[in-house]
Amino acid sequence: MYMNEEVKKHIKEKLALVPNLPGSYQMKNKDGIIIYVGKAKNLKNRLKSYFTGTVTGKTAMLVHDIATFEYIVTSSELESLILEITLIKKYNPRYNILLKDDKSYPYIELTNDKYPTVKVVRNLNRKRNKNRLFGPFPNVNAARRTVEIINRMYPLRKCNTLKKDVCLYYHLGECLGYCKYNNIAPSTISKMKEEIIAFLRGDASIITEKIERDMYKASEALNFEKASELKRMLDDINITLKRQKIDLNRKYNFDMFAYYKNNNYLSIQVFFIRDGLLFGRHKDIFNIVDNEQEEVMEYIIKFYEKDHLLPNEIVVSEEIDSNLLEEYLQVKVLNPKKGDIKKLLLMATDNAKVALTEEEEILKKNDDARLSAKKELEQALNISNITRIEAFDNSHLFGTFYVGGMVVFDDFLPNKDLYRKYKISTEVKDDLNAMREVLYRRYYKVLMEEESAPDLIVIDGGELQVGVAKEILDSLHLNIPIIGLKKDDKHRTNTIIDKDFNVIDVDSKSKLFLFLTKIQDEVHRFAITYHRNIKSKGMLSSMLDFVPGIGDKRKKELLRKFGSLKKMKEASLTELEEVLNKDVAKNLYQYLQDLEN
Image (cartoon, rainbow, N blue to C red):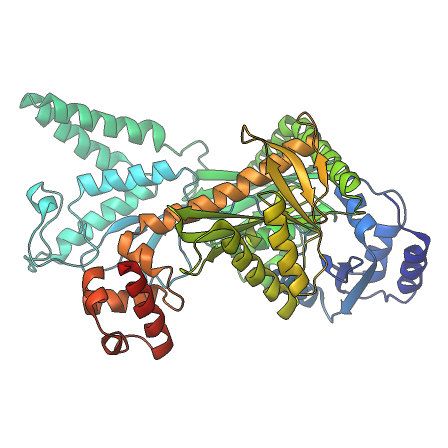
């Protein structure tokens, strides 16, 4: 992968003007799109490093795509870091690290209410007052089972809001009947909370003693079924929930980040230490373009922005700029030089090395296969560089309630941060018009908001679907290559249809066939999952989801006012306008009338 002479000359002239100062730099492709953002203590040295000497792997791909670069000088390295992260959030450059795990880890929350509850939570952004959080739990089943055990053993409040009278939990002895009996001694609740907190901090002695007593009582009463169930709870605590793999003999609480790099691959291990115990761990492996210290720092910042709870302390290796990270995250960042924490850091680094050693060969094979598929596609379509692909599919219920899905692939890797869902107008009754609406909405936004356009659009279908896509792009005066993936009579993709309706056969044994199938399967999964999620909310909620202008807040107001879909259908336009503004009320009124016909 080489630059042409004109680009080389342009880059060389720009490099001569770069100062030896800190700042953030932005690499751009031939379309002026930012494809990578980095920072440097010395801009000139860092930028020169990309264009002199030998580069390999993902870095070589980046350099091949660079047409120019820009930079912003800052007064300090902290300002450079803040600017770098801000630009990454804004432009989501394709060569910056994408966190693979799009789900945050769950925590266990013990509320600080008058009558507390315990539950599994994921969303840590909302205000939680003085509630206690324990975790994270990399194993969500362990978190749920822990909560189940606590709720079985302690008569905490089980409902979100107090009912008018006691429920089944009260009669089972698993709730104190807070809704009816408000004279429960605060000391009773305090004692329960103390024991629960001790359990969640790793001291299982109190709760296991409780279970053992109940188990023996059940056995003596010949209630062997209950005794067996209690025995399973003990096993869960002793096996599934046991976290004491490492005991530092002190009540340390921190997250530890260790890494190992080889052949442009970066392996990261995260250890979650709570009350001196290894509570859990997380790992990731990436193909990187910058030096590993910069990539690790970017990774740590992104890790906590993806809804992971920021601890009081973070531990990193000596090579990472702890002062800079501390200033940015506003938490204490340690570089241990000796002692137990240093030994643990070395162990975490060894784990990172082992993980990379085990997976590197597979990762390299996958990368080679992706790049081979990319090259095959470029040759088949006679397009010089296909990096970003946007693929579309629709889903419906018996020809009604259409939804659309768009997935994005960068170099044949899914970029889930850019996936999009579309609720389609209720007037749409067929696949082609559903596709027409989704494509228009997507690329009108690209045009009006100057978003990055893809290098290729992939449609699930043949000539008719490609014709619709071409019609939409022509109406918006956009020139983006389009292909349709056409299936044979056995419902297997076997040909590509380009925007000029040329038929291109695809060898079913080729890398291209494999990756196009993956894209097709992923967009189908995404669209149909969205449809199922809507339906699972309940039929009334599902139907309202298809009315333009009605979101969760208005849905609740309608349900509060009318209570059922039947009463909503019977309501006049004037009555609907008591809850909604005129335009939305009119949309809903017409929609409800159409349902009757």
